[in-house]
Image (cartoon, rainbow, N blue to C red; front, side, top):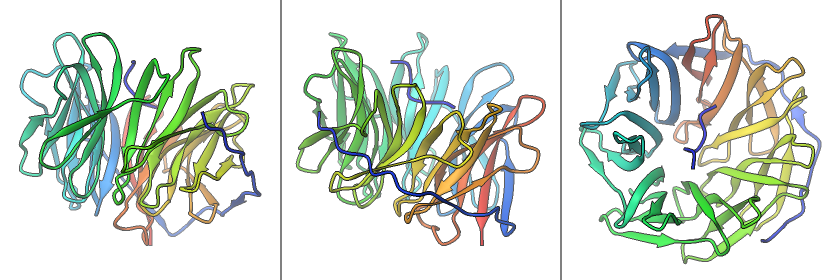
Length: 339
């Protein structure tokens, strides 16, 4: 899976029984690829519109938007080497970053009319945008000239506020809640241990780890302020977690996850998407509902399936996006809809 670019308050985990739902015969799959795509990676979906990026047969990465009718538009800023899409809000504004000639990332924003704008914070030598809320506030992180990493919040008027996690040697921002302005991410301490954090609208930062975690990586935050991600235990096994807004923690594993459960995203209503690795080291996608029910799935023809996130505006249809590998090693995007 494509993760972040290369670059403490502990709460108890409350592990409960996992209810795994049966395979859903009512689900339909739509697969898609931009022209010349070898690997297609959908990253965000809003009202049936999907944004992501893809690798062409030469090896370059490009952005794409897929309209609800299936029309795909690809895009790149001028003079870019690679274009990466990370998030899209309900107005269709996309954020991500672009590699320059030295393969250093720079944060960008693309509006629905196709206009692409640099949103790099002042003083940054590298920057990455990873989230945008419904009002147009953008979050991400950047490196300064002293090789220090900081988080940033850019308001809809274009003014940026920077922030830091005390004691961090590196930090990354994973997303922002659509309502409430809470920001989730992770940071590395001086012992190279990775922890999660939540920054509230007033700027207060809380750090956290699930019980037994040696590596905590949040990936999404919903409207209630709940944070989802995964963590590694002392045996390097990955488990999913959900941290509620009050700080209470639930850890979970997908049935059959002999080699780890990985969370990639969560919609504004708390539907979690991700994947697990079985005893044959094959990947399968899953969705976890707000009440803890888990459903696993694979599109037809898949040799490995990865769930990315779910549509926030169509939670009644449980529109989940991700990608799957085929027998030839290519990766295709999919939209899974349950009526």
